[in-house]
Length: 455
Image 1 (cartoon, rainbow, N blue to C red):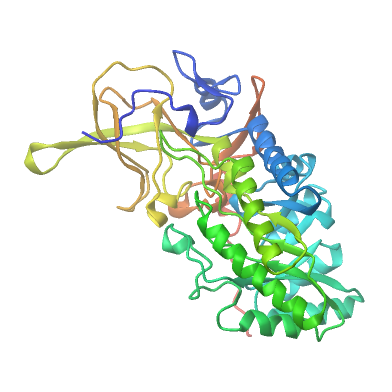
Image 2: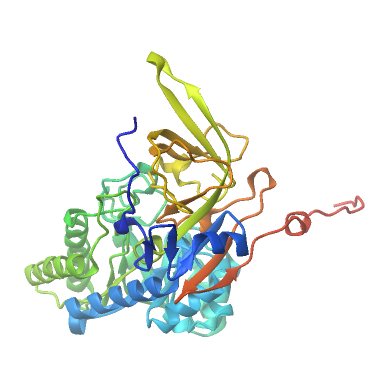
């Protein structure tokens, strides 16, 4: 039997508007059975009010804890972005952090104010930089020496002085999966403080009249719950700001401490509370600035998962079930759903853990050790490796997997030529498509037959 049982609705992993009404799961007043019947499955269901509340909650927490030193909250678009979501972000009064030309295009298509957009990325193309400069993004976060030259040249050609931040690596490895821990030395991102690269980059930017260095940025990882990593990173970043002040006799006005705030994926876990974590971070930054006799800079943050992750639940239809004999006479039940690694790669990529609930009815049947798997031709196509689920789950039942708003649809693929799922926004008992389901015509649209030509 799985150590993780599934006998109850766990509100800590579902959106704030979700409930089990005794008969089935209801999200923001919408029955999952009706949602599945109307829009099909797999289906991402995003609780619109919950998203807006979380975005505003982070904004309020930053402003309350940093007061006159509050910079901006930038929603990390990589976690999930669509035109409609970009509009929600705009209406919440926060910014957007984009890291590709595609993400920038989505934000601009939503008429998102360019002066509230930050451009990230470790390999920005000339076209991406040019577009960002042309539309007047708030800042470009520079990631390499080559990029310093590129941004400076393009800004010069466009006749503007481009505001930039430098992404630095403070040498902190967050206690998380190594593939998403991004601030130790051996990573592709940013300029190392320890090696002196960050300081050399600061000096290099100062040689270009078309660049205005406004501050530094760091991101220490993802799915982080404690303050320790943020505190140590802040200390090293502020020391670098002090060195810059002492050398150039001017203080850089901004410090962006990134994101990475954790959320609950399993019952019994808790999501990071923005008021608490930013309160603790404010104390750390204030103390460090006092140590170096620095004014507290404008502090910005970049939550993505912490805003969108808990807002969304994936609804799957059960296709087949079977039991597999294990050692010592034990068995494991396999439940195959109509999605899998094409809509949630995180289990395969990061060994991520999720929860699941029989969503269309209540079962009183015994629980058995169960593995939820997808429909793809891949042994690693696993949604949940081991969970206790009712033995009477059968084809046609619906399973709900919560906390899938971040890095689900945004990392979705067409593996095995499976169309990517739809995204439906729900609010006050009403539902609407914000991303339609792909169809077979979409999958075939890029195939071409051209005559050969000499090149």
